[in-house]
Length: 348
Image (cartoon, rainbow, N blue to C red; front, top):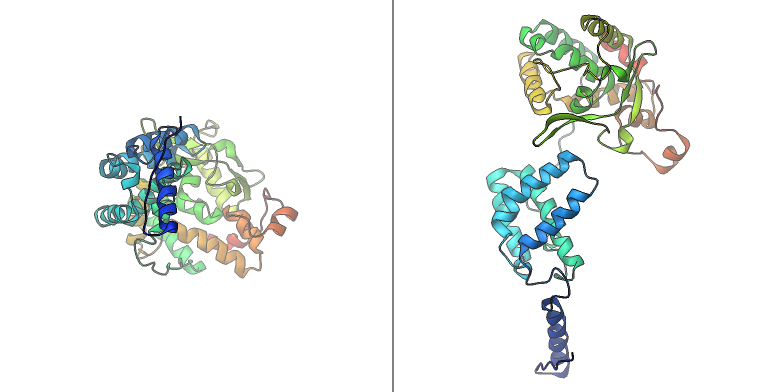
């Protein structure tokens, strides 16, 4: 069916532009697209969420996105039409989220909302994504560089934890030793099961992380944080001795899928709870500035001072590829990065 559209303007060019805009907007209202400029944002959100649920994101990421949709995006924007979600509307909304919930929640909300509006752009319901046009919410502050422990500080911290009854009751000394011996993240260290260890070869296979899934609880996601996270690491001798002691304490024959470092009351360690327990222990040791990331920095620093390569450090920590050349000509799954020899000095 053909319809006539009339538009006027003070000049021929202005009239032409007005006519083109009218044709464009009529197409968006025609219902040919499932999503158009008059569609409610709730419909776009539901369509975007269907894609997320069917995608390959981790359960933890999907859960975090769902929280932001239900908590911040839908209540504020769900009843708006797509064309009403302008740059200024998005900016005011994210500013309110920032002021009420802080930068972490605001950043995640921005990511989720950008994904939803990208879908609207893909359906020609918007010309551009308002989130990408709004600029930064706050002035970016220079990121503080993580401080590494010196050898003496690492020894002092290990001794302090071993002498701290509360830390011992929470099974923190061995857990910290494992992070210092490997540079693993809390979630990676918590996911180590006995089958991942070869104490005769003095190696540990990093192959998962502990995550919390809504309605399920804590579980081991059978993949590290990134593809580069799959790695097998050589352990220093003092870490092997600690693990042999734990193996004997577990009766000498723990199940292969049992966690090596369970929570104090059993089961898997929760990352947030463990971080809080570590913060208490570090404060008691007079080293409140220490975080779990400091251990990763310490491992990398000691490797660097010993003359080991950036490639070796990346393999040890499971970082992204240092360069295409190194990735092509040097394997990712190298067990012996040289870190085990360097970290022997932390034994004291």
